[in-house]
Amino acid sequence: MAEGFLTTHVLDTGRGVPAAGVRIWLYRVTGNSHKKIAEVVTNADGRSDVPLLKGKEFRAGGYELVFHAGDYLRATGQVSGEVLFLDQVPIRFGISDETAHYHVPLLISGFGYSTYRGS
Image 1 (spheres, rainbow, N blue to C red):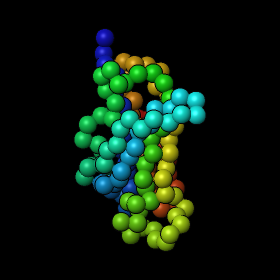
Image 2: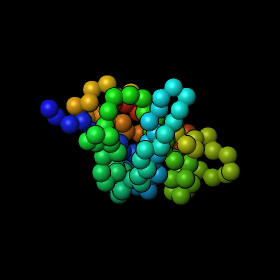
Image 3: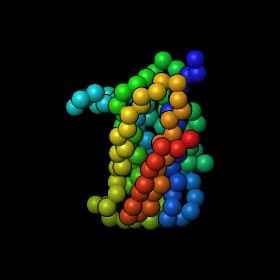
Image 4: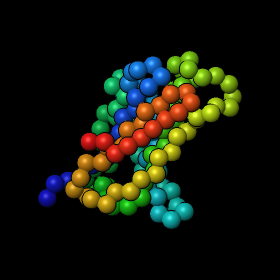
């Protein structure tokens, strides 16, 4: 049986480049309970160096990725100020197939973002 895994990447659509240095937290969500299970920082290609989940940790259920986009957008000079339109960007999703590759990318700019299930 194939082993599933979870990956992500961040693309800076405002500048047209991968978003390096974005801090990402992964939570397992059960009802109203959030348990942080992983923390990564994107590399020069806007990706984590290893999957966020794999092996016995990769199991069906609810999850949430929190992208610390505000820190990145400030550092790249795209936004300023104490209060930002986008700061932490949460994406809540579910995993149902424990043998599949789930890829959850974030496309970000100072005033908008999008996501999808990638490959």
